[in-house]
Length: 161
Image 1 (cartoon, helix red, strand yellow):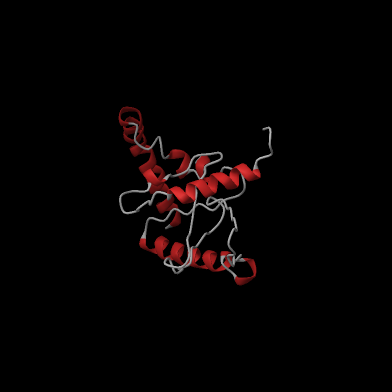
Image 2 (image 1 turned 90 degrees about the vertical axis):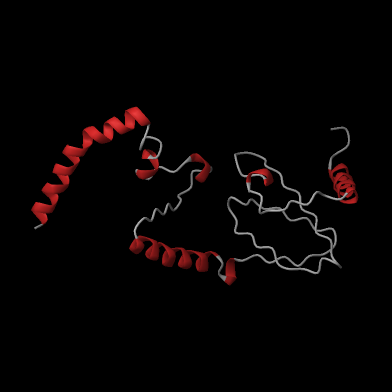
């Protein structure tokens, strides 16, 4: 049975190759996704060249298996011994790279505590607030927060530079 199945796959490939080649040349189908199908990650997924995990699930069985795998990975990545929790003190500054860190904001009393966040892209490509869609509301910074941030930057910058 294995031999018959293998022969049918080869026969199917031989018969379908001209059609797939025509689609690829005429309509540019399959060409743009070919590197991903071969396991080559887009540069935006692998900026530092470290090993990455690429999960491509199509069938129900693959999706269920991928969900279980992702749950295990999330549990391992959020294990208590490797999670950094920050207790805020006025004047604290925390920076992170969203491409490499799982970041979770926690609820806080907005009426008592002010939260000022600035986003900066130093290198590489990434989504910006305009790219995320209409369902996300971006609140502009208050003038007092902008002034305070600029004052902190001026303080941190060596004079004469």
